[in-house]
Image 1 (cartoon, helix red, strand yellow):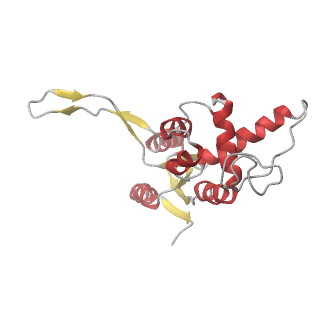
Image 2: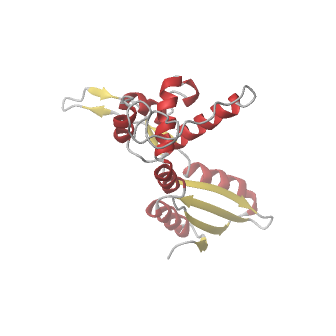
Image 3: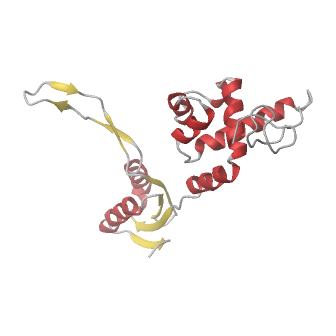
Amino acid sequence: MCLHWSSEGATCDLCGEEAPKQPKEPSDSQSVNHMDTIIYAVKNLLESNIKTAEIASITKITSQNINKYRRHAVPVEKMSVENLRKLYFFSLNHNDEVLKKLKGVRGMKFFEAILEMHVKEDLTDTYIKAIEDSESRYMTENVITDKEGNVLSDKPKNVWRGNYCTASHDFMGTIKICLISRTQSNLQQSIDEYLKLGAELVFKNWE
């Protein structure tokens, strides 16, 4: 399918290939909303898991250029009008595929768990801070050396279990730990650690 418009939506008026129908030009009052629609469609395309190489082969935009928008290195709003046009046409021609693969990304299942742990009332806030911090991202030393001990790299490493966590407590000193993760094994590791600390698993959404 080509990237031109056709007057009747059957074949391209320029090359004779299958093409989408020429849309009506938006009025001045509609132009902003029309551009918002284009940008929204392009963002959906870039967030889908359609391969960059497939998009590049049809649109003739380089993979490097496409990937800088997929990595959010440059906002889509700063994309050239020509590239927006090409990606918008691609999204129209592949709308069902974009929606299907976009749902696959956005609809990814979360594994969920809730635990309760009884602690001394005076320590509830401290436990909550410790629990939430342990599930948060943090930086750690990551020194790499050669055989002679010369430092090749000392860039810190970002460490994260892959779990999202909130903790709260009631007036009786019971802490509720709520966890979700896209990876069951990561979540199970945290659950096992809290169980060893005396917590009780009160809910999980998998067998």
